[in-house]
Length: 472
Image (cartoon, rainbow, N blue to C red):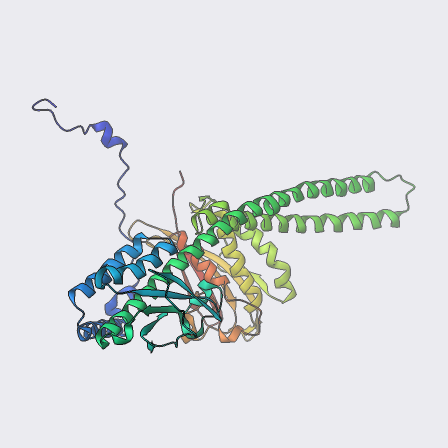
């Protein structure tokens, strides 16, 4: 570079740089601030102080502390079980010239010597106890797992003991040194659990990847063939209609009327089945999308949607027969959904399932109430409201409501409505898993939105608020 030349940053480079997005963060949840969670804050502080007191009482030497530090760092580096187990028995020898052996459970009633520096002259005659103990000249420190260790290993773990660290000649060691190896065994258990969990996760990922291929080959592709069958069926129904229309004049009127009735019924049933097929296909293709499995999370495919035509009306028609069977009216007093493309960028399949879950709940939980005029009411209503500042200044959102008549959810239960597996005590008579609202919450959060519940004099309003975004 010549004197006076400037660094190689040109206006072209700056123009090609990613645009800076100056958006502020979403409004915080006050419950996430520790000052608003004093019970948890106090509990955390108490445990930290207890651990500090424990650490001081151990009075571990600098070499002992260094070995634990080296163990922690190298346990992150060695990601195979063989290398990790080798590390566990090599460190005591390198730091303290101490021979150790590692035993692990291989089943609920089986255990095995998994790693040692040299084979012992004899193996233990029986399983050590689930607590630190001296056996002959050796000392055994149990290696405890976590509460879900049995799930990771695939079998029940008695006393939550994954195995034992055997310290050769440990019976003659000081109580201080024995305690040190107990703590070392505890750290082995923690790291071993994580190692096994990662290995199991890799197995699961491999299985899921194969499952995705199987789903595409054996579910998605064959499902598309049904569209061909539906087209053929529709053509046959049309041919039947032409036969009725072109029937000779001498054809008995009652015969023609019967054919016309059959054709009309078939046409109606075809429309219902075809609509159900279209929605089921949309859900299958959305939920079983390859990228969900590849990335281990729901991956949105956003596009501009017409909420009325593409989302709400198909779900209303899907659930209308079930609502009619239960005497539930569909009321549009909340304004319904406008027949216009709201500037909403959303994943069509997932948002459709949000409404499907809300309408499914409406079928199950709508109850009769007494209206202001003393007459019984039993209805479901849906509507929308634009909130100009829903996500901060200049960041509007659309609030989508689904209201049902019935007894309101008791205040103590409202906080858990959107948690996985939660079911209100008042809904136990209806079949359910407690997954529907949790799914709604998950999908809406992925869209950058919010969910909520509002009680009223006549019933319950569940709502979602989604950001209004301009599409590309």
